[in-house]
Length: 94
Image 1 (spheres, rainbow, N blue to C red):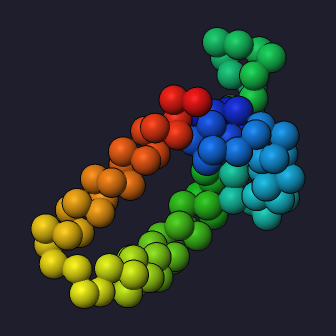
Image 2 (image 1 turned 120 degrees about the horizontal axis):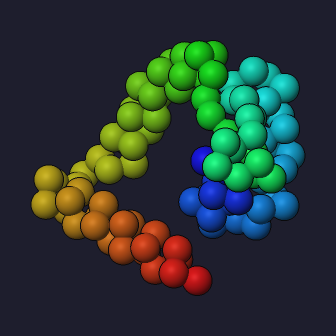
């Protein structure tokens, strides 16, 4: 994925991702390389350290999600996820 792709997926401007991408790269969590199909484009990918970081924090994110959804039954959770998906889709159309 390129920085522009990341920006679109995050609903921010490409310029807004520059500092974030730079910091992630300095910390060794991502790497950038030239796209073999378009030499003007840099692709971003996770490093082994980045994958390890995500693996470490996945359980914490799951706990936070569970805390957020406490009190919702399975049907409400499914509806909530559907509403979020619809909202994300709508925003991505702009």
